[in-house]
Length: 392
Image 1: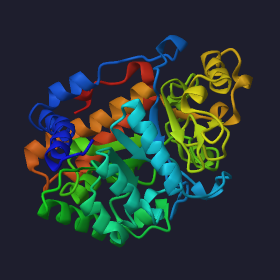
Image 2: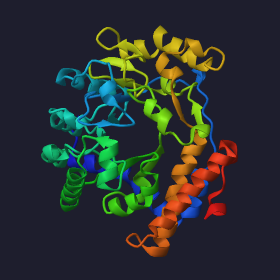
Image 3: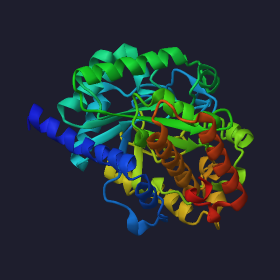
Image 4: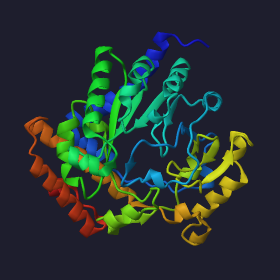
């Protein structure tokens, strides 16, 4: 079926309208936004909750152009490579067969390292498959033409510093000035050509940068809406098996052992060589449960190997030794705390934006509030997190 420009635009508008509603909600009703988002939820994995079709993510490459301190992708032992065009087309067929109209290019590499990423964006665009492109943004200038001609629905950048010094200390090999120039250029091109895409950014919070959060907003708010800034606390998912996390995690008492994990129950990652993994951060190939060159997607999704892994996660508390090493060593900040911290930062920033404006924020005061929140949470443990209204 031929996709007309009107039909493509309408689908993109429908997707981005949710983004606009979220922006207005936070901007005009921050207290209600926080109260709605902060409601607790639980999602224990079970065989009864397994969907017939998993959410698919494509790893176009597992190669990265830099080596961040918290990722250490260079330590990954999986075979490095790129997804061939033949395999990529086959995977688009699988997406369409599953009725999935949006896909992320993401695992441990950066999709812009792949010289064929422009062609892959074009194929998705022609099929009206919306792409979420997650990147460090440093190679963006090499692909401006395809990114403008076949724009992703969502461009998600990973930036962990508001200053050149901090950014380049964390993102080893990255150049802050190059990054800022790239973001400014793609933003201006999209605005000039009225391209309907959302821009988002992830900020990994650690000792080196937690005091730069308000400065980060002030630096990058011309490009990223506040609700599309994500402040994520450090976790152990890395090529060095969490060594950096272990030595730099000041909130260790709020961290938790992950298993049982939901990932094997709802999503899979098609790696560049057509192997199937159940985790986005499988640096060493320990969580591979099949190969599309040998089995169908349905056979892998309902197969013995993935079901054994699911059983191991359900029984993880009693039999941790049955888990793969990658799962046994997986630690993250407790889900409730991670979510409340991110929401608190948004709430705090929006409150000050309304009071002072985006260009005149009291940087030191906001930083102090964030550090006080972390300190209070650390003392009270995760089951007694302070209400933000009590701290403000």
